[in-house]
Image (cartoon, rainbow, N blue to C red; front, top):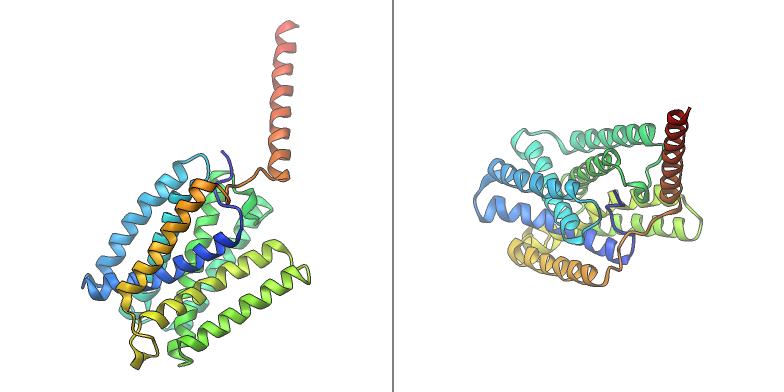
Length: 274
C-alpha cells in the first residue's frame, strides 16, 4: 500500500481551512435551514462519513477526491458531535474542550507507542491510517469546542477568535521555519489550530450582525467554500502537485521487507536441496 495522504503544500492548508469552515456552516445549514435537527443531521452525516471512509481505506493510494471528501464529511460530523454534547446533553464547553484534548493526547500516545512515529509521511499501513483518521476526528471536535468556547462562552467574538488562532498559527510557522521547531510537532499543532481558526471564519461570515457576524448566511458561505474546495481538488487531481512521494523511511522499510523475503526464499530453497 502506498502513502494515502497528500504532500503538505500550500494547497493542503488552504483546502484544510476551507473544509473546517464548511464543517461549521454546513452543519448549521442542515440543522437550522433544513430543519433536520441535530440528531437527524448527525445520523445522516455519520452514514455519509462511513461511506467516504470505506472508499478511503479500500483504496491503495492517495486519491484527492476521496481523501478530501472524507475530510469534509469528518469536519461536519465532528462539529455535530460537539454541538450535540453542548446543545442536547448540555455539557459545558469547558468540559468538552478538556475531554477532547485528553482523548487526542491519548490517541497520539497510543499511535506513537505502536508505530514509533507520528509523521504523516509514514502512513502506508492500515493501522497507521486508522490512527490518523481518529486524530483528525478529534481535532475537528476539539476545534469546534475550543472555537465556541472563546467566541461565545468567553464572549470574545468571532473576529477576535480569528485573530487569536491566526496569531498562534503564525507563531508556529515562524517557530518551524526560522527556529527549526520539529516538523511533526509543528504540523500537528497547526492542524489542530486550523480547525477553530476555520470554524471562527465560518461563524463570522454566516452569523447575523447582531450576533457578531457579517450575515452572509450558511447557504452562501457553504456554497462559496465548497466550490473553492472542488476547484482546488480538481486542479490537484489533474496536476498531481500534492501527490505523495516515496520517502526515505518508506523506501528503507520496503527494502528491508524485500530483503527478508529473499532471505526466507533462499532458506527454503536450501532446505529443499538438502
